[in-house]
Image (cartoon, rainbow, N blue to C red; front, side):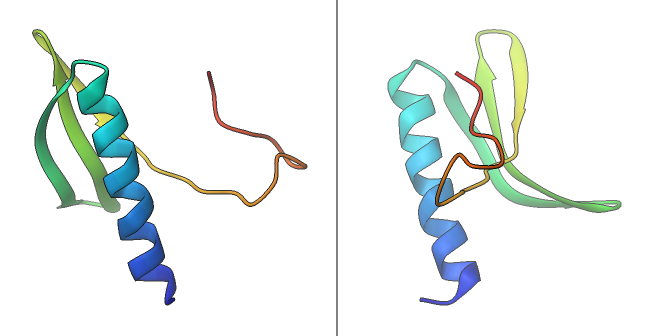
Length: 65
Protein backbone atom coordinates (compact mmCIF):
# COMPACT_ATOMS: atom_id res chain seq x y z
CA UNK A 1 0.00 0.00 0.00
CA UNK A 2 1.40 3.41 -0.87
CA UNK A 3 1.98 5.90 1.96
CA UNK A 4 -0.82 8.26 0.87
CA UNK A 5 -3.41 5.46 0.81
CA UNK A 6 -2.15 4.18 4.16
CA UNK A 7 -2.37 7.68 5.65
CA UNK A 8 -5.92 8.10 4.36
CA UNK A 9 -6.88 4.85 6.07
CA UNK A 10 -5.51 6.00 9.42
CA UNK A 11 -7.20 9.39 9.02
CA UNK A 12 -10.52 7.60 8.49
CA UNK A 13 -9.93 5.49 11.62
CA UNK A 14 -9.12 8.63 13.60
CA UNK A 15 -12.23 10.38 12.24
CA UNK A 16 -14.48 7.46 13.19
CA UNK A 17 -12.93 7.31 16.67
CA UNK A 18 -13.49 11.03 17.23
CA UNK A 19 -17.06 10.87 15.90
CA UNK A 20 -17.74 7.96 18.26
CA UNK A 21 -16.42 10.18 21.07
CA UNK A 22 -19.01 12.81 20.15
CA UNK A 23 -17.12 15.20 17.88
CA UNK A 24 -18.63 16.40 14.60
CA UNK A 25 -16.70 16.16 11.34
CA UNK A 26 -16.17 19.43 9.44
CA UNK A 27 -13.44 18.85 6.84
CA UNK A 28 -10.46 16.70 5.87
CA UNK A 29 -7.15 17.35 4.13
CA UNK A 30 -7.50 21.13 4.04
CA UNK A 31 -4.56 22.88 2.39
CA UNK A 32 -3.19 25.79 4.42
CA UNK A 33 -0.08 27.89 4.10
CA UNK A 34 2.79 25.66 5.14
CA UNK A 35 0.98 22.32 4.96
CA UNK A 36 -2.28 20.51 5.40
CA UNK A 37 -4.79 19.94 8.21
CA UNK A 38 -5.70 16.26 8.36
CA UNK A 39 -9.04 16.69 10.11
CA UNK A 40 -11.13 19.59 11.35
CA UNK A 41 -13.73 18.57 13.92
CA UNK A 42 -16.11 20.34 16.29
CA UNK A 43 -16.54 19.55 19.96
CA UNK A 44 -19.56 21.64 20.88
CA UNK A 45 -18.51 25.22 20.20
CA UNK A 46 -14.78 24.35 20.02
CA UNK A 47 -13.03 23.80 16.69
CA UNK A 48 -10.49 20.95 16.88
CA UNK A 49 -7.59 20.65 14.42
CA UNK A 50 -6.26 17.09 14.22
CA UNK A 51 -2.89 15.88 12.92
CA UNK A 52 -2.98 12.12 12.39
CA UNK A 53 0.26 10.16 12.83
CA UNK A 54 0.89 6.44 12.72
CA UNK A 55 3.86 4.63 14.24
CA UNK A 56 4.50 0.92 14.11
CA UNK A 57 5.94 0.92 17.60
CA UNK A 58 6.18 3.20 20.63
CA UNK A 59 9.99 2.98 20.73
CA UNK A 60 10.32 6.70 19.94
CA UNK A 61 7.12 7.91 21.59
CA UNK A 62 3.46 7.09 21.23
CA UNK A 63 0.13 8.85 20.93
CA UNK A 64 -1.17 11.02 23.71
CA UNK A 65 -3.93 9.39 25.72
